[in-house]
Image 1 (cartoon, rainbow, N blue to C red):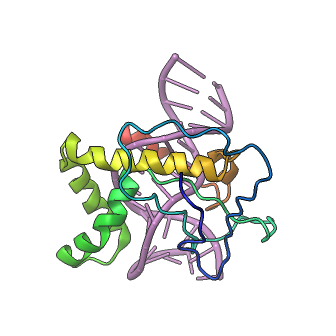
Image 2 (cartoon, rainbow, N blue to C red):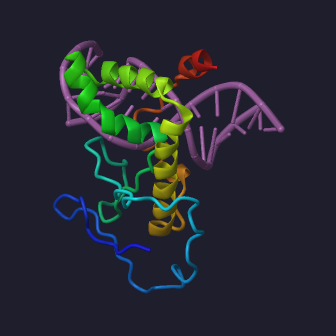
Length: 151
DNA sequence: CTTCCTTTGAAGCCT
DNA sequence: AGGCTTCAAAGGAAG
C-alpha cells in the first residue's frame, strides 16, 4: 500500500483524492509475485489534447503503461543520443528492436513493473476502464493497415 | 494548433 | 471466440 501524493503532477492539475468515501481500499490488493522495487509512477499529464467536451474539472485518466512503454521511456534518451536521432518515431522503432533483442529474463522486469502499475492504477481508479479513453485522441483514424501488417 | 508517425502490449469493440 | 482498433510515450514532421 502506498500513500497517495500529488507526485509528478504539474500545477496541481490532477489531484488524487483518496478520501474515505467508501470501502474502496478495504481489501488489500493481491500480493504481487515479486514485490515491485519502486513505486509505479503516477500517470502523468499529457501534452496531447484533452478530451473534447469534457469538463476540465474531471482529470484525464491515462492508460497504465505496458512493459514496452516502460522500456521505451527508459531507453529513449539513451538510444536517441547514441544514434543521434531526435525523431520519436525513429527512436521508438530503434527501441523496439532493442526490446525484441532482450532475453525473456531481461524483459521480465518490465512486465512485472507494468503489472504493478496496472494494479496501482486500478486502486487509484477502481471504476476506470480503457474504454473511457476511446475516442479521446486523434480523429478516430482507421489504421487497419497497421493491425494487418503486424499480424 | 492538431494529428501523424512508430514501436509493443493491454484491453475493449465488433462481428 | 477471435480479429480489429485505440491508447499508452513522445517530439519532430506534416497538415
